Length: 151
Image (cartoon, rainbow, N blue to C red; front, side):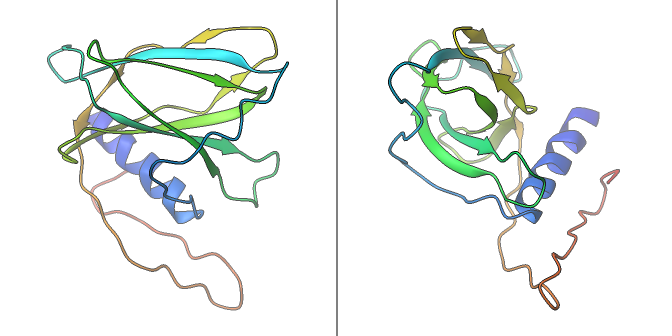
């Protein structure tokens, strides 16, 4: 239950700072020479690999003002595995099962030049999607709080 609260907090935080939601984004981070491989596996709550999970790759900015930018979309294979080439930077992954009722999000991580990275297994948990518009007063971002969470 605590991990579900953490997931909801991360999702609320990311969406409250303006994360751009995107589907089927053409990769724009695989420039020649700098890219290294990121890989991992997505599991359900019973530790069974999940195929067909859509993973959106968000690049985090160097400052805290600019929202994360969706830079690539990948799909897990029949073994729940994924692999993508990324340039050195900080990233976070949003994962959504084909049914849209299960989701996961990674903690921010850094890709370093010349170093491959394997993330620990991501476990999908039941999710709820809230949609709407967050209005700002005088250009000041509005804070979004979810009931039943710690943040």
